[in-house]
Image (cartoon, rainbow, N blue to C red; front, top):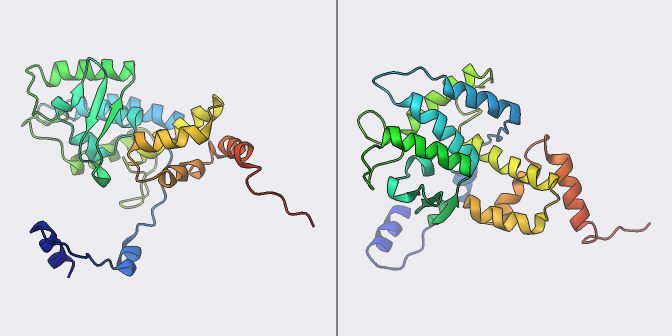
Length: 245
């Protein structure tokens, strides 16, 4: 029924797409996001720098840049792997993410240090500029696959001395995105930034469907939870009054 409804819509007709909520809830992952500490991120960076060069692979060039880009921008892995050179503005230091999750486009600024890393990377990997080329490519100039990146990241975790609980349990490379968001909130808390203004801006930056999706990061890690909890309580303490006995 769903496929028929999708066919009708693709043919220009209006149709209702039935949703099996029980099936969706059954498939929903029970995985809990892993938030890397600052020290673990540093070890991952160092381990990525030590990927052994291979003439039949570009992973020793790709992984150090990709991991830093994911941490510095909070991009989804597939968003980074789908980046083409035409979407990378090294002059202004911006990345254009097109047709991402929830069919959203967004413009992502990168830090000056990340921009310099991308400039050095592109000078080696893309000496002849072609707008349609993918940013992260293999020796055949085809875009790097998510599966290959996943396997290489597992190897980097081992080198960094970070335990992996097995497939489906993580830590995953996607957890770098979660870590980015939590570390941004941690920095905001330390800098006394107004979180009521911070969350909507961060939600747009991350490409979340709603602010509610972003707010989950407020309680995602014990490392930053106490500081952020205190900040939220100071902002919202008068919203729900105390009940006097």
